[in-house]
Amino acid sequence: MKALLIARRELSAYLRTLSGYVIIAVILALNGLFFNAYALGGASKRSAEVLSQFFYYSSGFTVVASVFISMRLLAEERQTGTLSLLYSSPLRDRDIVVGKFLAGLAFLALYLLCTVYMPLLVMVNGKVSFGHVAAGYLGLLLLGSASLAVGTFGSSLARNQLLAAITSAVMLVALILCWLLARITEQPLADVFSAMSLWNQHFPPFQAGLIHVRDVVYYLVVTYVALFAATRVLEARRWR
Amino acid sequence: MIQVEGLTKYYGEHAAIRDLAFTISQGEVIGFLGLNGAGKSTTLKVLGCVLLPTSGRVVIDGHDVVSNAHEVRQRIGYLPDVPPLYDEMTVGEYLTYVAQLRGVTSRDTASRVGEAEEKTGLRDVHGELISTLSHGYRQRVGVAQALVHKPALLILDEPTSGLDPRQIVEMRDVIRGLKGAHTVLVSSHILPEISQTCDRLLIIHKGMLVAQGTEEELAAKMGGQGAIELEVRGDKARAVEVLQRFGVVVVDRASDGLVALTVRASPDRRPQVAQAVVGAGLELLRLDQGAGQLESIFLRLTHGQEVRA
Image 1 (tube, rainbow over the protein chains, first blue to last red):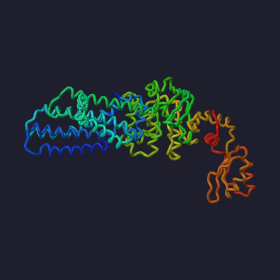
Image 2 (image 1 turned 90 degrees about the vertical axis):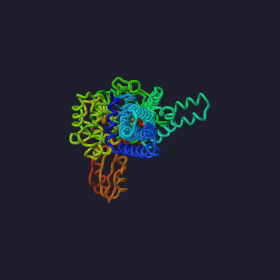
Image 3 (image 1 turned 180 degrees about the vertical axis):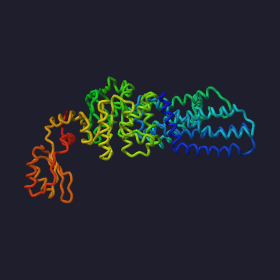
Image 4 (image 1 turned 30 degrees about the vertical axis):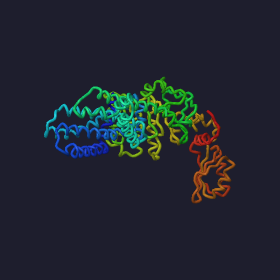
């Protein structure tokens, strides 16, 4: 319950300050440009391919959006001293973390909602199934959830928002680049790295309109672990 | 209400507070006094459940702040040294949010917010954005958030810092108005700001408790002799020379031939001081009993003398 209270305040803060809109607008513009230039451009292709390309580019922008959306979550509370308010109130640390994360997720969902016009264009002008679009968006939401959770963790570590964004970006890039490690290591380590990678093995099925349980589970586990770590960081800060 | 035993907090290698021990009973208004960096904020952060102590025990209303922090948090209202405000909210929204965070039911929220605004004089700015408020009002919103849920214990860290003289008087009235309903612990580094409001004072210096008691008790303990303040026209060196035989002389101000001084001597000796000044050919413009005996006690306690409570 308290987590929802925190989430509601955080979300209304996003909606009232300029920075939230700027983040959405800039990333939406870039996403649209890429869609126009790469997914729609080039030789003529089938609608399903265009849609798949759309999800390919959108996945990247979703991760970037997550970094920018999550950077303020806990770092800003520390910066302005409002974390003391939460610390001295009867809340569990996990309420704070989950509340913050949910607000970020809601805001990310708002961003994803704004991108819907692109697949709609494909649907109107071509022939793709609704299921393909739904699967793709589920993938984007799950990928975004994992990235936001890592971002929340980064935000809990950092002293200010800029450092939070850098920390989160470094962690996410490391997670994505796990597949490179997979290519240069022996089995069974290669399989482990490949399975750990944030994008390589887990997102392409969604992009093609397929939902596998293992991919859903992977993103949920990353979300859980990162939020758990953020909670631990908040707890440890009290000993500082 | 509060029992503190052997409270110690290290930041890395540096001990911010060492071996603090004191008790506070229900309904008291306690002034927590010390220079900047003495460890006041650290102590209050521990009592406010923001920081965990390195060692020692703090029990608030029967609950330990380490093992039972959740219970403690339901009984306290804490104003940190920087008021924890969200600029993009209005005063009313903010207090509503805080009340709900602290477990006030939604049925009671509106009336509690109204009461808190009434007590702190925020009625007029209920609908204003916090970002547009002046420093004095922000400080009041900080106090209002600490008491909106009617906690048994209020912990106010320098509620008067940065306020102008009129606002300080108003804030003092606010704190005085809390007497009875709450146990209050209020810190300051400026003595007169709290000595009039508080039942008892705790004086902390370099992380250690150096004295505690009522104003009179402290004065008696220190053989309190008080101070005499005076203002003369004439040569500064001459004035100091004349006054030195009465006690330690501190020059408060000296400009344009006007010298303001404080002599650490019993106020009973004012006639002799007046005679001495006039006899030395200086013009006596003002002669007063020192603002508070406490001031000199505080200064002595915090000037490195080894005095233990």
